[in-house]
Length: 358
Ligand SMILES: [Zn+2]
Ligand SMILES: [Zn+2]
Image 1 (spheres, helix red, strand yellow):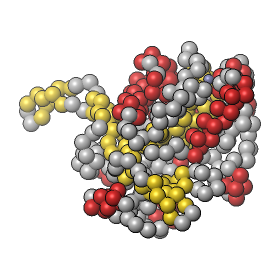
Image 2 (tube, helix red, strand yellow):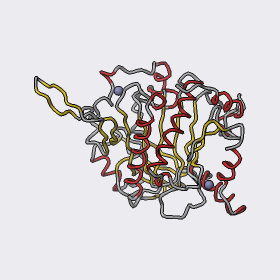
Image 3 (tube, helix red, strand yellow):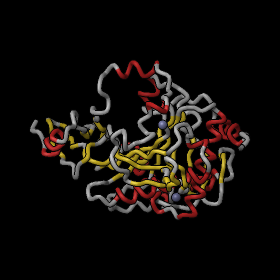
Image 4 (cartoon, protein in one colour):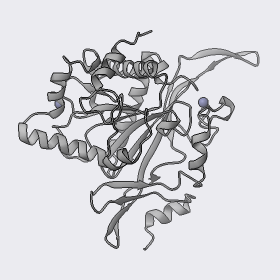
């Protein structure tokens, strides 16, 4: 296979292993091959046994610039403080959140991907953007933050989304958060990630296709239909003026939670400042109840929103999915794509509703 210009540039820039996107011949799903992230196969064995803690002195996110993450792409400061430094009172600016490039990116930096063929297969250069959103406190994960801090995190998601979505070769911006070793976090210091991709990821594509098919048949949004029911139902965990948190009727995993804007809205990035405050409350409520209820489980959450490829996705309803890791996936889960539920979503909602809020 001929080496593409993108690969040549990546190798010149010092990337040992270049990311690639490969399309499955049967499903049409695109997968990322990012071998640059895992250096040795034995890392897979060791991690399960390690305790998921890291002393502050070894944490790469305490001072991201010192650890080579480059200048922040976005930075928020705490209130400016006057501090005494060597006897002189100086204004010290302490950051409270910053966004940097991922040092071990899923996708290599690059402009546009080229599609090419290898036998019957289609593949693409793994060109895109991968950023890390780091909050200041080493141990304070989202469920322990104040509402203002959670809102700041959401604001950074929105700002970076808006910055990345207009890149001419970005067709999807995916925002996600891994909490805990079992959820795939590689660094315990709380952080989220943003990936800007040239393709629409498989699960998002399925979610959009399902919403479109329902819309074509019934001329209305499938999620709005669900929400109409869930706001009154026994699966609702929390709701405020603009958002609702509930356990879906058909969860993919035990204790799955979803957060939806109550009014139909296709694009996450269009939320207003007021809505952002309500979303912060809904997200915090969901995570706090989950962390209390399951004693700080590992979990992932991500935003499913309309792609930014210029097409009309008015029928789509953006939302957040929160998936706690309460089981290890075996053959049945991997082969069918669903977890065997050991608890009913109605019981999960009842249990989480009862959790006392501090
Ligand atoms: Zn840290
Ligand atoms: Zn809707």
